[in-house]
Each structure stands twice: as structure tokens, then as C-alpha cells.
Image 1 (cartoon, one colour):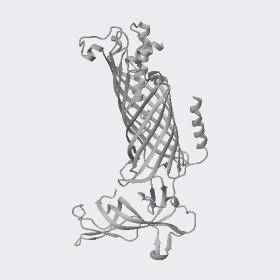
Image 2 (cartoon, one colour):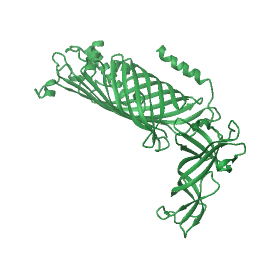
Image 3 (cartoon, rainbow over the protein chains, first blue to last red):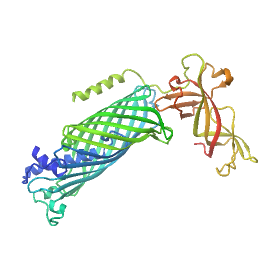
Image 4 (cartoon, rainbow over the protein chains, first blue to last red):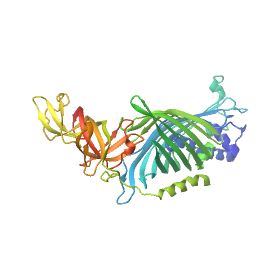
Length: 329
Length: 180
């Protein structure tokens, strides 16, 4: 089973092929299951706002292992926000705010195969995802809030397989190996239901904002349409993120805005299809940012700046960098 | 998995330690009557103002801003702003440069000493203070709230809900039709 998954992951651009060129029907079924998990995982990682850690995020790059000749690039743009100030919930000592969040992302995974018979072949998977949803944030004390959030994530994933001769131009008429023909060159549309609970503890230390957060998330993915009836993604995934975040004003002015710094350290455990599809059990992220304070100076914008993250975990390392923008409505 | 459950348990424990309370501006702040900070320059952006008087010949409007007892004059530019037919009592929006004095009192008045002697009267009260982002939220007598960005160095750490705020407009920067 592990070998079969490796074949599928190799086709989808994550691991090198182990040198297997004959696939039995049983192995094909296992490979299809692995491909389904892979689609599910890429859609969630590419489209879910929560897994990006928040704010805007630009192009990222993950390399599952230093030996793998594979690249995975994510571009994500998203945001979330609580609307207005907390309002009393009935006669209870609980405040509440409307919470909305959305995200859009695209990804591309490329694997250059290095096995006898397939040397130089290219397996490429591309896709995009759109996510939108909301909920409410409930303040049960001045420092502790709980936000149940429900979202929908639509995505499309496309896989193409290019034989080495075609890729290099040496043999433009080369065809896909017959063993792989019914597992490659497909397009799948999926819809994922996302439910999460964001629990935060926030306190002010001098002028710095310190946040501790825990966020369990559940994903249910279903195939809406597929160009290949043998390929689809139907499964459940989960993640559990714990995060320590700092937001620190630096006391320096630039362009009439105060400079702020901050970042977070997070640990996210992955479950189900997300774990199987990525072949990763947990992701750690260390994020740093340098921003300008725009709150109450530019409508609905809290800060604008630059941020970067280093990500690591068992069998995974990578980085992201880009614009870091936060909104407050 | 056990490792991840621990923060959840810790957060739940913290959650039981207090209740949330809506911010209230009508509480009596701690300490004796005193001035916390004088002449805090702020800019109010597109807040509602009321037309008190119209001088059609001189093309002037006298505008009353929230929290103030006396109107301030806006001169010229009425045609460009489609304000030629405005009547007294109309509600407009304005960008104002204002000065705040934040103080503690027992009857909303405070006798100043020294160079700025005289009695100041509260036009609003502090509702919320956010020192991290230098935000000061005021609540006026009619319930209107306004959140202001104040300069660095302002003594936000000494301010709290219920503090009185005397407001004086120093300049009308712009005026537009509409109450919102």
C-alpha cells in the first residue's frame, strides 16, 4: 500500500517513483484512493484560509524531501475579519461580532521522474480554489473569544503527464506508458465543507498584543465533476492548529504611520485525507512581519507590510513570503 | 494528540475566570479631579455636523460639531460642495481639526489653573482606550461614538472609560452634504 501511494504521489508531484512500472488492478485501486487523498489535500492546502495562517499570503514553495525532484508552489490571497465592536448577546455577559472570511488560491506541483522507463517524464498538477464563509465571534471574557466558522471551498484540480521525449522535444510523438494511461490527464471539480472553532486568548502587555489560539478544523470533500470516472476525491480531513502570536508597536513613524512588528509560531497537526495526501503529519510555521499601522487612518485596513514564514515538519520544509495585510471592519 | 489538547484545556480554564462586559462611558473614573492631558490634536473625519446659521451673502455656514457648545464658521466653497441651498438645521458631514482635553471630574466641569485658566465643560466621555493602536473612542451625550487616532506620546495609559473630554474645533477642513 505504501508503495502504491508513492506511485500516486509521484504522479501528482510530491515523491520520486520507486521504480515500479507494472500496476495490477488492486494496485490501481490503491493508487486511485491515494490520488483522491492527494486532490483533497492540495485543494485544502491551496484554498483554505486557516492553513495559510491568516492575512494575505503570496507565493510559497514546499519541498517534501531534499531528495525529491519535485516542487509545489502555492499562491494565496485571503482575508478575515470581525465586524465592528462586540455587542451584548441578549441579557448575557457575552459579546458577539459577525465574522467573515474568504480565500482564493492556486497551486502547481511539478515532478520530474527519475526511474527506469520513465526517466525525464513530467507529472504536473495545477489547480485553483475559492473559499468563503463566516460565523460569529463570541467574547466570554474581555480576553477570551470563541468563533465557530462554517465555509465552503470550491476547487478544480487538473493533472497532466508529459513523457520525457515530449518535454525535451527529443521525441514529440512519445506516448504515455500504457500502465499509467488511465490514471493521468484528468480534471476534477470538488466542493469541500469546512467547519472550525477558533478559540483565542488575547492580552495587552504594555503596548504589545499577545494572542494564544487553538483552532480545530474539519473538512468534508466531495467530487462535483470529473473528466475521468476512475478519479475523484471524496473524504474527510482535519487539522488542529495551536498558535502563539505577537503584535508589537515599535514606536517609530514612517510615512505618517507607526511601524509594527510581530509574527507567530504555530503547530498544525493534520488528519485524514490531508495527512495521507501530503504524507505529512504536522506542519510548524514561524512567521515574521514588518508592517505599517493603518488602523483608523485607511478605511477597514489594520496594517500593510511584508511577511515571511519558514515551515517545517516531518518530511517537509519550505517557506513563504509576500504582502501581509490585515483588515478590520 | 495529547500535547495538542493541553492548550485547549488551558484556554477553557482561563475562559472561566471572568465575564465580558460591554464598554460603558458613564462610570466614574478613579482618582481625584485632574487634567490628564490638554490640547490633544485630532482630526475627525466626516462626522455629522448641524448647520446653525447660513450667511448667503458672505457664503458662510456656522456648524455645530458633536460635543461642542459653540458653532464654528465654514467659509467659501459652498457652490463647489453643492451646499448653496442649505438651510439652518440641516445635517452635513465634515472633516474637522479639533483639540481635546481629557480630565477627571465629578460634575463634568473642571476649573483650569495657570495659563489656560477658565472652566471647561465636558462634551463627551471616554468609552474605550486602545494603547496598542493609539485609539481613543469617545461617546457623546446623544449616544454617537467616534474613534480617533491620537499621536504618539499622548498619555493613553492614564485614560480610562468615564473620563471627561472637552472638545474645541480649531478648523473646518471640508464639508459635504449628507448626514452619514
